Image (cartoon, rainbow, N blue to C red; front, side, top):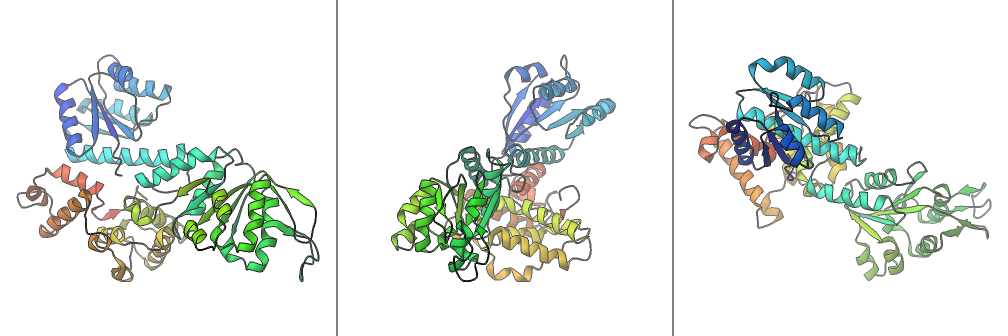
Length: 452
């Protein structure tokens, strides 16, 4: 579960069950609200995202199934966990067919309910980030990523220039594509150019085109990227690598919406929207006179910062599962388990190359895997695994809690329950400890199955 742990609604006419479930959920650090009937829920609740509903099937008046149907009619997509008695199995089957996420038969284990809630909140949050907002290619649910995607949603509907800032490998092109796909220009061309990959002498021709005979080797006319992107979007990656002498012409395109091809005096107008990206500090480059100040201010109309992977540690398990599934499918492998010690090492690693480095590492791991358990070459990581002391002299509360739980689990040889188990030593009940482990990224062996 991400740091934004969501909200759980509990609807049950039995007060003891209702309050007992609420106490359990609150003990796991998740906010909750209780209702005695379906009618009360419909009259007062305004479901938040991410959220889920723990719902008794046999409610008086409006039954659990009736409430589920009312929510569907109103367009509210809230994951539902049904609580049933022993005689409610046929009704539960109907509920699952109608779209319920899970059901638990009373009396149920605390851990089973917490795991079901965790699954609902995580899937609801990922659905909200990816599907409802249109970020289909972006994997992650962390708060810092969600803030960046919120900026994307805000600016996408405009024609304003966007400057995407972030380290190498953080996914700046995916952010640019998301802006284009959410914009009114989404049915027009998305034209990209990596300014660092084009020799300086050819970059002007790539951007603005040239006429036949404009320079040695120009045997035919060439249409430039700004012309191709007319009425669409042009994405200039590594914009900080554009030489000073060419920056003036780029500035003119942004201000006047016009340019000339090399070797031509005919002015061409363009309605291309510009999205630029850089992994450099352009303001520092301005101060060093390596980048034009007027161009910087023209590009920096709406900056979007893409977080480094070390800032979104909660997304690493999601990304690992995503890449394992992707490469296992491509290589016709069947991988069912990601070892917990490997996942914990991946979570602790600093990933200086960000998502690109993680993706390449997982591809290598899948290549090395011949059986159902992912073979992770951890020997490639230890020298660069980060400890809290190398990043900061201060620990967050979550870091401290995670370290304490890990230390206790090692002492008990990962035994959680029983008089000598980790839960007893930490003063928690077993279900709460398991829930905290899930939230903090401390996992049992990662069974791929439905998660990948």
